[in-house]
Image (tube, rainbow, N blue to C red; front, side, top):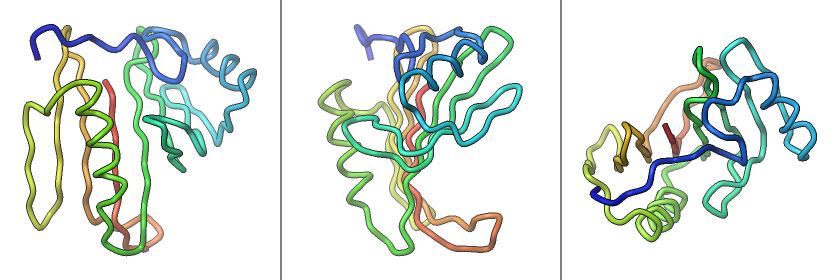
Length: 141
């Protein structure tokens, strides 16, 4: 959207921050780090959009932090988390540029300057362990 702001970072970490500096920040600020690799950090129970997300992931590229993802799941169909996040995002950024609602899922996307984006998605999925659930997925990049 014209005049939209780009994201400076996630969870208090500036875009472009190296993974080792991010880990120090996360540990020192009370975040629960569930694991990490060379280009990813997994977190538990993260506050984003004034909601707790049980699973979060920070993604890194050669230049440091580039994106974040937040997951919330239920074993049954329930759009309430999606609707709460959608409401928060429209208050902050206006209406999404694209939206879709189909049997395979619901999603909305906001675009900002410099290639930044937000995607909010709700869809049924199976986990690697074979469990079926409904996932609200929030991504910033």
